[in-house]
Image (tube, rainbow, N blue to C red; front, side):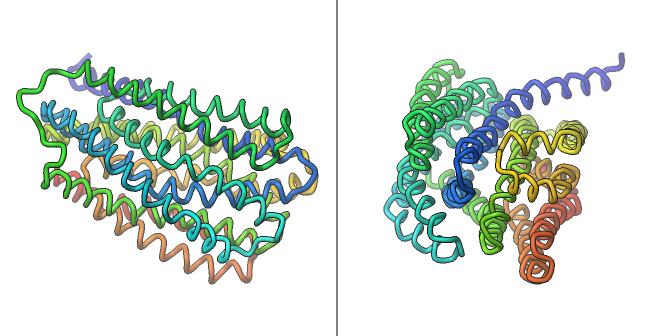
Length: 440
């Protein structure tokens, strides 16, 4: 076997060994959403599903917006590790946790007016709005735990540690699933029971994450210098990266928020059906994100070493694995989509509506795979500005289709808008990619 072939085989093994536990961890997130949908989906009215859909959408809008704390931590940590700067690796987790604390404090101060403004914008019926409000006001107090966990997971990924985040997410989401079933069907708490389950589980996961950070710090190589936690230049760079990512993520989460808000305007039944189908998109995105996270860590180390050829080899391997995972997702949805819908809800009218639109989310993995894959590549190189600009252009196209086509084509127009957003993101990132590689 040639040296090049051996190197490529080892690289593929490294990527998959890291991506596999991340994919398993990520899939537990939409699995939690699917279980929460199923828990209320077997109650006696569709507005319970709609309430969880709207409440979770509002909450996830904030959480995903600040997922920059994970994305903005992995790349710089991996680059510092690739450059052999142990002191900077240690300082990164402190800076990330400080940003998480500041962001969560600001959000808790503003969470009630933010909720009022969001519900004012959404045309949901009174029972849906009431239960969505209950859900959000309980679960909002988990913000410090969730944002802190994002920082911890991002740092661990930068260390190429994918198993610890897997254990943390399985612990958190496993507890959440068990408590959701217990509180809703055991104690009869309804929609608030789902929110309380999330709150308790997320603090348990954060506490376990802090314990893991302490142990990881003890295993790191000794540093030959001490990096300042509040180093002005490093903080400015981190804030600039996170600023780009906040704006980028605002557009990404706004897509699904507007999708669900427009679904609510179509009525309780289309809203419930789209919430069920949204689960398919979540499984796809979180699965493909696993490969993106692996790219951030492995390609980030190559960027830290200024190893352009290693970066290219890693890029080719990530693209290949991403296409394989996207194609597998598509095949599963086409073959078993109706059975998955039946697991999520027992209401015949919701199932019928969801099956009518199943082809859209079933084919979406083949369209969205490139956007998710290139996200990891851009983050590995910390090229967040072009990444931000590309998403802004794709979001503008999404809005044009959403408000131009949806009034005439109804639910088909909503799904077409999401398809345009994901497809255009991947296309534009591919077009700009040579400049990213040249900067390594």
